Image (cartoon, rainbow, N blue to C red; front, top):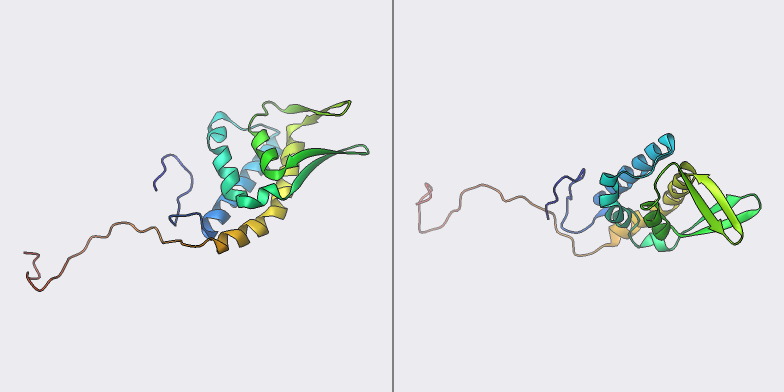
Length: 157
């Protein structure tokens, strides 16, 4: 399972503990950059976003809910997985949240912060889930070596 132009490499044939941790680190670092610069995803980042979210959260993203606190309102943003997928479509440094009769202009870094905090809650559960994934085999490169048989000699003939 080879992937081109990806910043990570799978160590197993299926998603594993180490792959999950690598993707979580990558995502948290990316979100920290987005918070610092108050920026949306680039076109290149958008391309792999859905896979990155799935590999990072596994099935835990549907359990945790995200909210934006505004004055005395707690505005639901959906479950963490859905909210993260919506972040893919937000462009520009600000976004308008619509809730009931309210339209609230927020900096995108505030939304990234909500996702970051929620990921910190999800990560331990996703790691535990990744450990429980069964049927994994190490991904091994084809090795070079000699084959021995009783019918030939050591020179390979």
